[in-house]
Length: 441
Image (cartoon, rainbow, N blue to C red; front, side, top):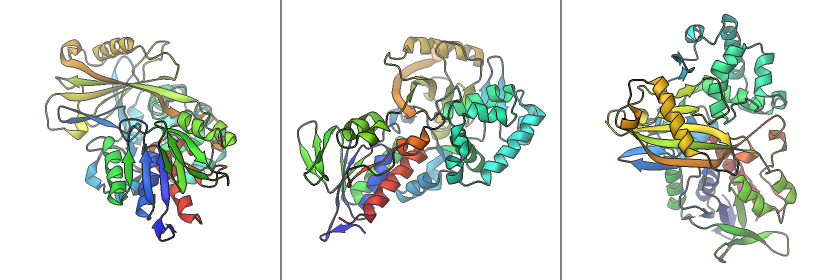
């Protein structure tokens, strides 16, 4: 229990994404007085959901791997039950531009998958057994993090067909890195998540996680404040933070400040006090645009994601399609909620939404010729995430900042201290809370 003079330590958490919420939840339940400050109008960060005629629609495709250790713990602590997570079928369906192929992570399915040779099937089986037998910590910290995923797969002997037809469309979406330039240690960790668990979404969409976490904080007396952007961390003469100043001019006192904002905002707040940590937050982001459609007729059946493995051109493309309502509202009729995701760089120019709409219509014409897309599809919302996650080419994760900063009572949380995933965010929040609990204040 963290105590100070018989009263809980006063903690300000900057950012109400999953890292900030995980930290706030642990701190509040450990006896701290917690105030969470969120700059936007909603909590949850990328994990936000809108209502579409009674159907939840995530503002960007995501999934929770059931094998995520800290995330599973976090969900249990805020009240999730097994029935609250809806798993996708194992594997995916893949369209190569000409035909559909069903892919499952089984030897029988892989032998029938046209991109795989018999040798590829054997090599994938060996890789699956290897990552299953290795701890997550060792997978993430091993020497493989100094090699690209593409190079690693080729060194392991996988054919070009397996890389282009399986690894690139699947892991290119998971990592927002179609070039497979992410470090191979992170790839091996993700491979373990696929082998030992399943991808799932909450029954009410990912926004349910933020809502339930916020309720957990409030239940223990915490305060959640939206539209409360922080202008600066206020540091006293003793070199310790004494609070934060909001852009409105309001000053909130604090014994501890946890910075769990997105990397650019965290960098701005830390730069005046800890330029070294701030410089290590200068990461290269990947952008993702999601088109949310309401359909009068279903696009596809089953609890699967559909991946685009057609050869990549130079223009915009749709990388993943998910009819999310197949999981969340499988027995209801229209509207059917479809998420179409496009991965792109974080260039300052906004994505060409019209071009993406046109590409989606053309792609559906190839994928499902009998569906009159223009008649049955309505574009309900476009969500552009310029900083969907950060890229982790070889060596980047070694240079990420840790939880502590040069200011003794200012801590850093966020997936950018670990790896770009929901698990990275949640585990970073837990680590920050653990450090606060151990402080002598």
